[in-house]
Image (cartoon, rainbow, N blue to C red; front, side, top):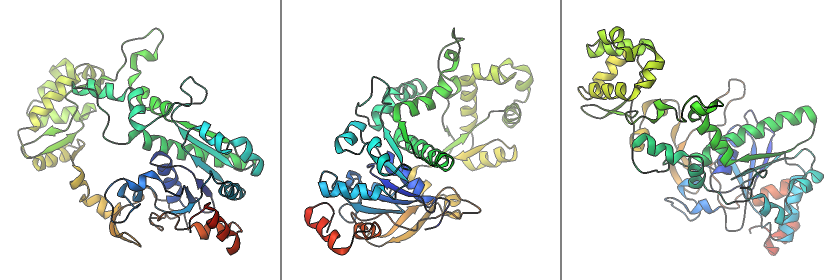
Length: 399
């Protein structure tokens, strides 16, 4: 393995999406991520189309560059094996509730005795410091309690609905990756690890309130909550004669040039709604409606040529199928066909970041089959063939 995090060993007890996304980011940067799975495997192995049992598409896209070790942590031999692995690990990542970790005996107080350098990273619904501690949490629930469906309703005028992405899981996974790396840097300075808590509710709240606290930022409030530009109904892709176009007319210069393209250049100086960004924000729904009317009069390509020439930001609106054919993504390698050892030819999502001095990994390891690396990892940890066979016989690991 190569990459900026080469030499960092991560034990990954997480499942489904939030934790595995965080550890995949670490793996993409070169960390040795050992995915520890129960005998039945991560439940997400069963989600999505699949060629072989336990290798669903959702699993494939969030578990590359990892090794899979089966350990039954409810089995005494399996638990003891886990403690042995902790001795040489740098990071432990989990996303079950802390109470469940404590019942297994895998709490931070115990692990730091085994390895004082361990970074113990928990990703779960709510901070342990508040009254919601221990409540179950899923992406939909966290979107809801963080006010996202309410904002969707305000913006569309329709019923509240969730963003059609696992937005909370991926946002928290990204935040967890940042927090874990900060703890790694701190350990270089102090020589000891620490426990890291990354709660979903608080993380999504930070995202939402950054824009939408608005007037409530002040005491007493200077106005209502909500960032008006993001909530107006006309903030949407614009229909053209042959499709949809995404256009952002934002600065003074953008608006001046766009009004020229409309043949209404006089409005920029004469209409007080265009006086400055504050005035435009107050009237933004009307102004966006004006843009929508203009967009409907010509084709997408003709508008792109005119807007590009005026240096006004615009892009075609993709659907998922056309996104898979985007020429830029194909050129930079974000989408490429690979041969998976068991799943055959498949389309792989690339690594979005790169380093000049520590070349990115790309995809050096495909998503593993369940327990594919159990014997390899246990051998590295010092277990001989006889000891591994004993663990297999006891049901602590797979055969």
